[in-house]
Length: 309
Image (cartoon, rainbow, N blue to C red; front, top):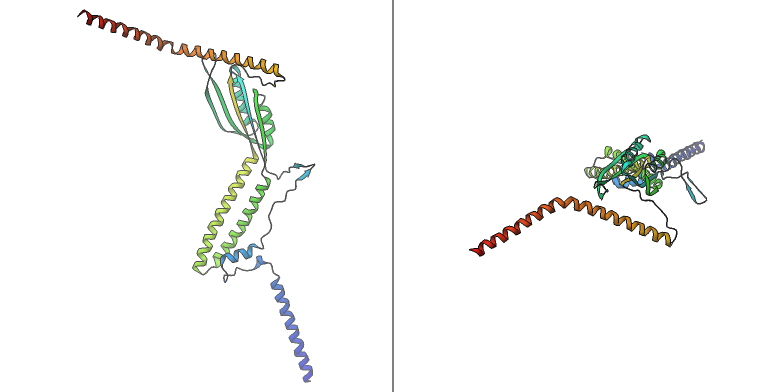
């Protein structure tokens, strides 16, 4: 009888030990994200310990390399920009300027900044030639249409385009933002359970720094979204009497001929401007000459009166 009781007691002890071991292993294998904040540790140690369980939010592009060429996808962030320099003769300048302004509205964009100025160059009639500059923002999907249209409004003197791929930068920043947002929630949870004044002050300082980082990352993402969704086209339109023909000199003879022609045109333009300048100051020069002559006469008359005395 005693042996049976001892055997039963031993079996009960073994069963209890097995259950306790199972519960211990189950608790040890629980993910760190489910562990309640432990205020016996410092706040920084607590945040670092829980951050180890944060999900990986790094960017993985679905774009592929085809024969060494990057093939962008819809999730990629590409910033498009272009610059074009135009010339229009006096009779066509106002029309070309109006068409540039209208194009921004036609493609669903807007003019970010523009200016109309009178330059230093003078026309043959003495009037100052004008220049118009504009920075146009257009939806990225309509960039090609706007770019091609604008180049038909006047004579193109120079143009260039650029494409900047900021996809990796964008998603890296987004990953950092999400990590900071997770840290913010964890610090808020610790603040709600903190009882020590020093711990509370340290947590609030940490929260202020985290929120500052969050604001900076959000600003970067907003700026990239703005630049990627609306492309930029910069336009310089110059009013001229005669359009400068863009040419490619093929040989030395062509270069000499074109150089002589340019020199003759520049000399003629200088003489025209100089003639206009002389005409502009002719009236003051005549008045100055008359006053000078009167002064000389008065001076001589005064000297003669002194000699006669």
